[in-house]
Length: 131
Ligand code: HEM
Image 1 (cartoon, rainbow, N blue to C red):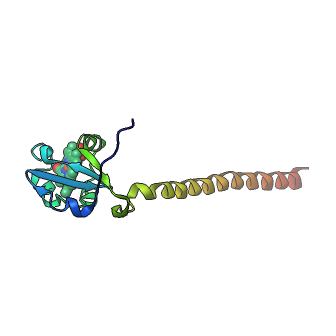
Image 2: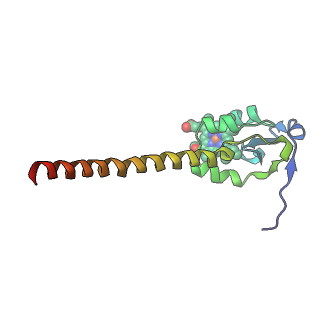
């Protein structure tokens, strides 16, 4: 896919907040929800309230389903210019994953060390008591 992504600034999107032209910024992506207003299961009011603005937080607060997230793609018209982007949750997630992996690494380390020490202790005890 060599299609170019259209870039927008937050300033130029601010005025696109009417029923006739409604855009949303979610995770630095720009969505034209004008035709979706009537169909949104959460109602058009919530979308219009956030139109022209960054709706990432309210969007995530509702914890939309994966169906809703794939539906979003249909309405995507572009992205924010680099300078206007925020550090989104997705940008943090690799770090978060690393932390998780480290934690998992630590717990697997202790999960084999403890049985090993118990095994050594049991062997020593056995030798002293029975040999
Ligand atoms: C392109 C953007 C959006 C899409 C495609 C979308 C799609 C959907 C879908 C499919 C549902 C049904 C439940 C689900 O599947 O999760 C839903 C529910 C809902 N959405 Fe959105 N939504 C969008 C943006 C937003 C935003 C920005 C807000 C808040 C400002 C919002 C607020 C809600 C609420 C309150 C519900 C109802 C939840 C319920 O009754 O349980 N949505 N949305």
